[in-house]
Amino acid sequence: MFKPIRAVAAAALLTIATYGLAAEMRGDHPDTYVVKRGDTLWGIAGKFLKKPWLWPEIWQANPQIRNPHLIYPGDVISLAYLNRVTAQPGPREEEPINAIPLSDVEAFLKNLRVVDSFEELPYIVGLEEDRLRGADGQVAYARGIESAPAGTRYAIVRPTARFLSPDPDRCCEPGNRRADDLDFRGKRILGYETMWSHLLPPGGGEFLGYELMQQTVGTITRGPSGQSEVSTLLIDDSGREVRAGDRLIPVEAQPYDLHFFPHPPAHDMAYGQAKVLAVADGVIASGTRHVVALSVGARDGVDNGTVFSSWRVGSTAVDRVKIGSDRSPDAVGRGSKARLPDEYAGHIMVFRTFDRVSYGLVMDGIRPITVGQELKHPDAPY
Image (cartoon, helix red, strand yellow):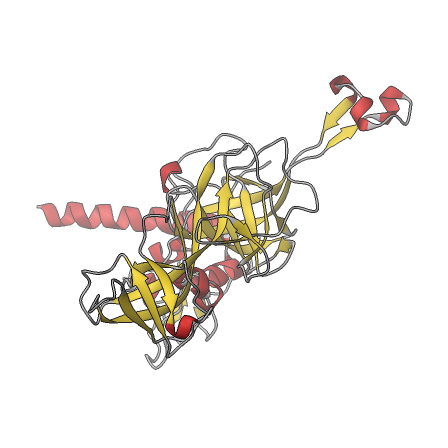
């Protein structure tokens, strides 16, 4: 008696998914699509959907696809509704495609993390032969891991940025400072590599976390012995140079997600709460497939796959027709100014989430993504 009811319910859900997807499809879509090398799930949806961040709806309308993250080049996906075409599997000779190109975010998945503090972590106290820098194949000496057995592997990390929430009174004119490198105390020093080129200016904002950059990896070869009170760590991975004061974190086996299901934020956020904090890769503005840091994280209901639309905050223009003069904007009252509307720039999908900060990948856009832009629901009309 229950099987027909379940069958009817399943058919109803499939029908809803089918018609829901049909409403979002572009008018010139084909009946089928053959997955190609280099495709991403977002990219496929962008070819056929009006809102590419809704790509899971394609898979809902293809019940034979049990796992959208196991779609391979050569697979045939059905885009028909009345005369459904059964999707055909292709060869399984290549890696399955993902929602986003992992090569664009790998460094941010593997080498960066945001923490509330780092002072309590074990640290490098010196290097062999009293060197100032250490590299692959050399030895470092560490404090705080005396009880760890030989063979334990540690990631060697360094604080590189201090994130603060946006301060509306200081955000976000041209000429924002470049990201700073921090020493072992979290104090600013100059002249070292950083992943971020531009950050929100400091001052007045809430502290959101320290970013730690992985320099390399090392393995304990022995603990304290004889007259020595430190542990010996062999640097056995290529990477950046190590210096005294670098911190140690136990190596984790893949501590991040590789699969992302795009979805809107869990709830609406107050205007000004969610901002673009930093732009990566040595540029002032960011475009498609560039990484940005965002001022919201897990405590705000953000998780991996959350999609935002990014908006250039509307300027405040002086109504010179109304005031009839060329006075400086600072000398004009609020009643003689007009707030211009925010301007849509693009979509950003979160791929790494921390408590109060997250990393996102710019998925598409019509304007550059810049520091200080406002983050809204992906379908926000203004």
